[in-house]
Image (tube, rainbow, N blue to C red; front, side):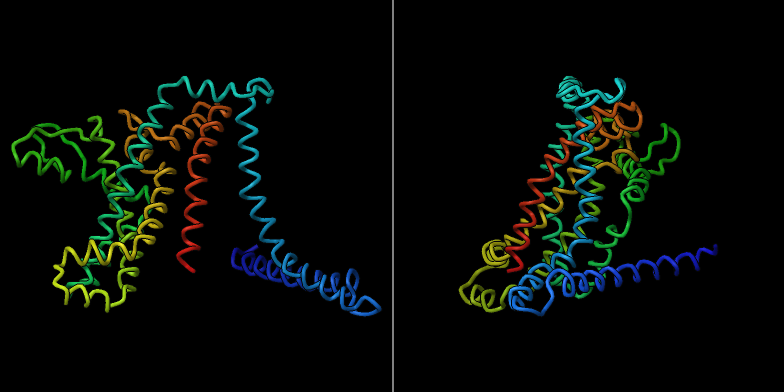
Length: 332
């Protein structure tokens, strides 16, 4: 079948299925289960109206359960079993094995370092960019340039930054910007991505570069929402630009800053692509998601790999819930 015809057929079947589902479920509710007739007509109508929203929500809830809840439950079960023993239940043995591995603790340590540096730096640079770009004539061009990395995939950004950190032996022309500057200053060319612990910070630069644009857009919108009267009152009272920024504007957008910070924190906890593409977890740059990938798809140790996936879920879930609560509070 021609791909275009197949696509059209898929859309028709999907739309038709949705329309049929809602029509049939309404018919079942109104004609069979709770008909609007007879001595209980009032009670039937009320019950039908109570159930109808859940009928509409059911397809979405079913899809979420199938694609989100089931994988979590299945991963948890895999973390308690041993594939080499035919899927036998082994309790917490996989977690104990994972805790004994130095690479796991290296990944935990590096993830904590990423958590400290990247959200704070991205939010700070984003806030600074949002404030400054609103005050210059070519601010929109600057915003576009800062936001542009958001359109690049993590792997694409990693390839770009690998060129920045590129190394050529002494005597050859350096094509990496960092080594070119370093040699120009009188130093010897370095293989930057192998130098610990600085290589971790060099990897973090990639994510900071990407996330600063996101932070700038959100915080810029929040800054524009600050009432002009408060700023004008501060100017009349003799406040200088720094006092206006740190004592008037920042406190008023504190909740937005927290939402941006926690959103970037979630991205950091799941960081994988950048490390895989640039160092593959070598030279003490391992992170949890890459450790999980190594265990699942290279060592084929499904038990320990699933256990590390559960660790990531446990780290992400509280921040995710807190972020949703904060976002809902902000919307109100």
